[in-house]
Image (cartoon, rainbow, N blue to C red; front, top):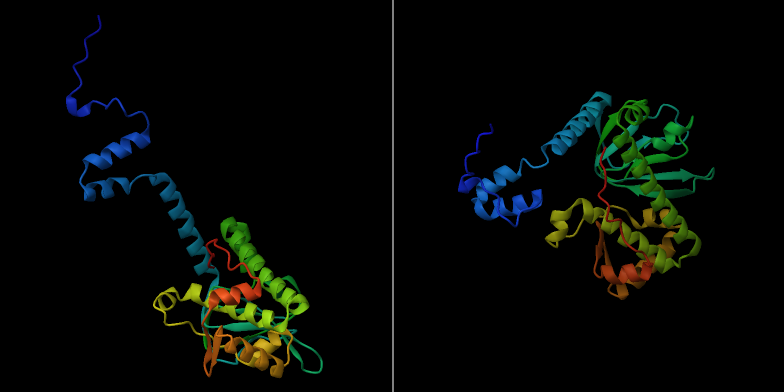
Length: 281
């Protein structure tokens, strides 16, 4: 003989309009105090959160294991010499640098500028000798990794391996765009592209100063721009004066002030930085 179940108390009854978990959550949010709801809703997706936290912890532990030390270099210091065979891997944590190649007569081509978060040394690791050099544009702090760290990251943490691939592809896209400038853009378009690209990259790293309208640091000199854009110093200077006359920018002793970023973007024909969050090693 089956026993009759006791009636369900009113406070335990499910409202007739609740069918899914999302309906339950909306109902609970309406009835609970805001602080109580925040406490309970914070536990939603615990399994996913725990898995993500564990993965992040494993990545951090691997980085700390592979990390050898941090170094501080000054403006003009060479991090990697052209042809060097004992290079390591580096993450630029603070400051600016640039990659370059030189011809036998000393003429220099700057390949791209490096800012905080850039991963340095992958190209050298793939070959026996460094195909280019890296010099500090400002005082900088770098994290030094073991030479075999690249393989360890790919083998033990595929997510980190993907992040390294993303950073390398991102750097390659910057170099490709600079090659497009040198090959097809006019002098004004080249300078406009370089200025707005570097400004946007720097502003993305210093969002507080940018939001406050304080500007961002811009350490490249006119000579650096000339060497990056395949222009003479005189031509670069003349082009900068033209852009200044159009009230697009103002060149200063310690850098460059962007006055009309939208106009520079339009002149450059550049679509802007990727919206995808940037990984950090």
